[in-house]
Length: 288
Length: 243
Image 1 (tube, helix red, strand yellow):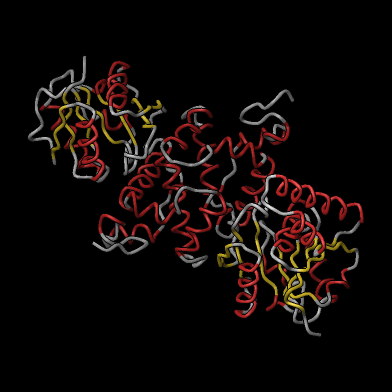
Image 2 (cartoon, chains in turn green, blue):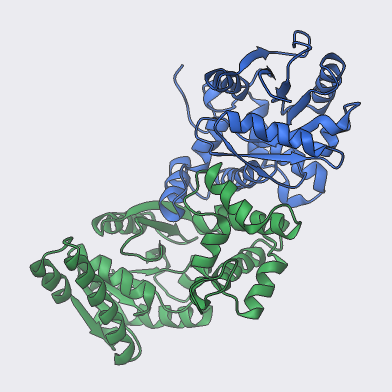
């Protein structure tokens, strides 16, 4: 079956999935957004509508453009609707068995030419691809949160991903208005791996009584020129999310001490002090 | 004691910057490759050596013998803890550690640290000196590499490992870190800027002091320093630079 390269499918209507669908629709692709219940789909589409409305009110989008983008977006509850699309991007929750199950189903539902991509940040693309038969046409497309605002997409080559698949997907990412960078399928790819010491070493210095949270943030901004200090940034990302990313890399690198998590982070996670979203992290926020 | 004359000792680009900035701030400042010609009456001595331990130890001993006992010696603690550096002086109470990377111009904050035997008045003198240069200071605990140099060196080390393992190309790594987490510079370009030898000195210092393998330097970084590929200053590092 032939595929339509101007059609993109997105699986999962959560923050990442809806964000990726919005990016695709804004770039002119006919976009299908799948989830397991109409409620999830409506919530995802609602989030996109709110975002676009904000853009229009700030004068970044005309009412006509807004309507055109929304007209290119459709929700679906049936994987079979993906049969003729050129590229499907999976953005379901980070659970390996769930992802593998979905790739098996996608493999059966989609035309043989369809490229299947996973937005995973913490699992091996190769392991997910192994659930499908078309392994040379499976790769990672790692978008950053929130997708409409972050320019980067890591284009991840699994062990069996074909060169042609990398090329086509890279071109599609460019057409989506994003900056693709190629990475091999290794733990944390580029960004999540190389950024680890920014958090981990700051936590270690704090744990050793090297300096206070405020001083470390002040130094990293005032001497390093980083836009945010490590503790401000961890509070924004969420202590739970950051802790999970560190644990996942620590496991994937077979307990290399470079990726050892911090007891401070673990305590905060267990106590439910997760950063801005709970009103309390390394700093306190609002009156929560 | 008021600071009016400063002797800068070292051959690094940072030493040159310190002299220029001191002069621009109304201080009498002189640059010296070693301790021999340092004025015995300088009100503050600052030295930027981050290399071999034997050289640094000898330099501290010479400075100690040369400048008057009340003169504060501010010493780069990129690779050694302020306590270790101060132990090479007969008057450890006058030795203060500072740690930063080239270039000084864009640094709003300079980290200072006293060793176990450093006097509080010495730290205050060092703070006064950097205030005169228009810099804020932050006092942090005694350790090799302090905060910013240590964290940046570890980020660069991880980038060098990823490059060495073939995870991605130089440009891809740098673009990813700028666009994915808003770093002001890509880590490999940043390494070329500050000097790979300085980055390696920080990693080796932290590794030596803590015995923790998380600071183990990347083999690629060590080879590049051995080959003289130090970055911008030598014309080649992770990237090439035209003279």
